[in-house]
Amino acid sequence: MRNLVMILALMFSATIFAQEVKPTFEKQGDQIKGTYYYEDGTVRQYGFYNKEGKLHGEWKSYDRTGKKIAMGQYTNGVKTGKWFFWAADKLSEVNYSNNQIAEVTTWSNKDNVVVNYNN
Image (cartoon, rainbow, N blue to C red):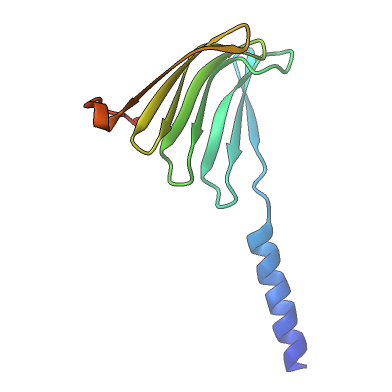
C-alpha cells in the first residue's frame, strides 16, 4: 500500500511539472495579440496577427531569464525591415527584403558598442 501511494504521488507530481503552458490570444483593435510561454510560465515571445491570421506588426522574443533576444516586424506574414538579435555580448542587425536576408551587421561589446537588452 505504501509503495502504491508513493507511485501515485510521483505520477501526480510529474503530471504537474510536465504540463504545457498554452499560448494566450487577445483581441486588440483589429489584430490578435499572441503570447507564447516557456514551461515555467515566463514569456517566450509575443506579437500580433492580422485578421487573416498572418503574423503582422512587431514581435519580440525572450530567453528563459526574461532578457530580450530578438525583435522585428512582420507585414502580412513576411519578415520586413530591420530585425535585431541579442546573444551574449553581440547584437546582430538583420535587414530583410522580400522575406530574405539582405544584409547582416554584428556588433559586440569588444567593439566598444553597448549591446542593450532593454525591453
